[in-house]
Length: 131
Image 1 (cartoon, rainbow, N blue to C red):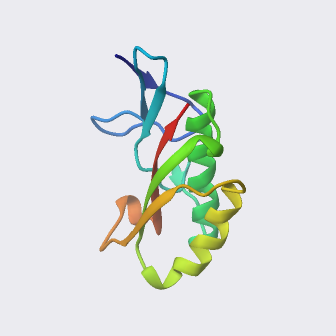
Image 2 (image 1 turned 60 degrees about the vertical axis):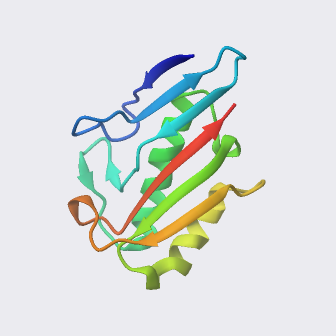
């Protein structure tokens, strides 16, 4: 087994003792990507994007997509997501934008309401992807 840290400037830099993602390659060649939760930070500015759940979800999914691309994967490789919402009543708005990223088979998903997210974010999404 080999572990590789995935780092891209197209997604927010880690601001603590964690990695944007870790890519695990088994001896069989199978690769699994474990991506840390992404919030709606614009990586060029280092700040949370302005707006509500729709704008934040779009930025979160861009950040997830950038990490996937750095690992040589796409949304089609995602097998599991964990989604955190600051307000579960915004689920339908979140779900509509989230669904745009998974045009093929949608991954397994867990969605939770969170009392608070970093930097006052409305949404956070982490993924597991396999290639």
